[in-house]
Image (cartoon, rainbow, N blue to C red; front, side, top):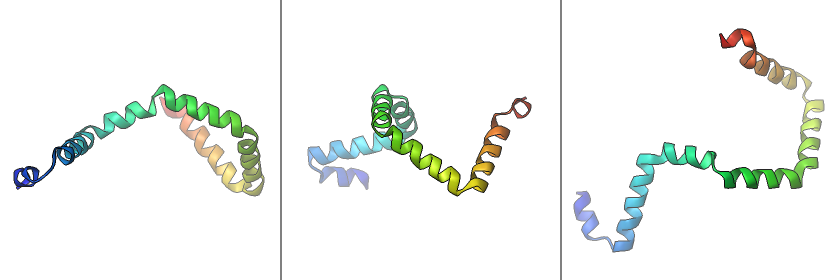
Length: 87
């Protein structure tokens, strides 16, 4: 069935289909590679440098408005990263 569909495709459509299939097969490794890319790190760093004050202000406001949620978040973090739970 797929062979019949491919016969009716133009070369550009066939290439698009092949790329889509390749990405679907390799999406985990592609996403992992994108996550670790240097360009992504640089763009995130530049964005944070530009918006540093806003980020800190937003997080401080959230902490002040939601002390219970903050306490839960800190508790989860310490449990997850404590030395007793790692061994």
